[in-house]
Image (tube, rainbow, N blue to C red):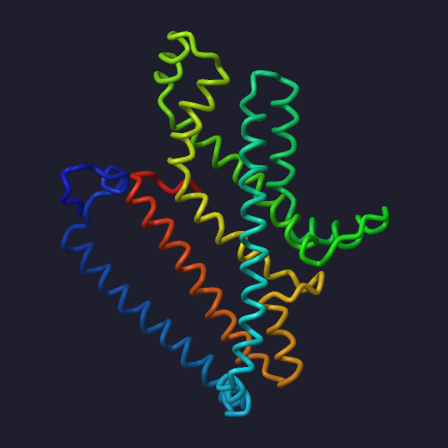
Length: 275
């Protein structure tokens, strides 16, 4: 229940559950917890029966060399994610400005480009950069073969996030600025954009989670990211379950921290996460 004196969106859409509903929620929560615990037990039991919990599949994680190698892959993932994120931010902002342009041709073209990058899977773009681009004599490193497609795929989504932020700025401010003699260009860049960006900062951080997850297909271009280095460990130690489990935990922790950062920024700025 909200005790701050303000009405949240959740309070406006949903009633607080009564005693009977709270009792049902507790019962179904217990049932769900038991079902999940049973499922986890069954999975662990299957791994145990097939010998996947044997020490030889896990002991190499006690070695510093293993974590150093995974750390190198993690740095590769971070490098791609940050670079792709920065590029997608710039492209998304440019696409959004063209999308809201008063020049119909530019707005129409930007809309097509945005919908294209939003609709095409990032893996397909990666294959395009990996298989098609080199046929025209354009040589790229594996870093750019994964970074550019991920950035392009994210830019279409970010363009719409930026546009949502622009639409969240009260129209009265734009009208007041125009009535004072400011040009549309100055209104957009000095009044609308600063507020729009502040509104969508939490959503931009949240979108970085998608960028991080998209980098997991870097094995297509043999880029040494976290997952690719993990595949090498699987080959060397024949430890598929344990390696993928550790890598999954690392990705979950990274994405969890990013989501927490987005929520923290959202609370600090008072902006909602636009998805």
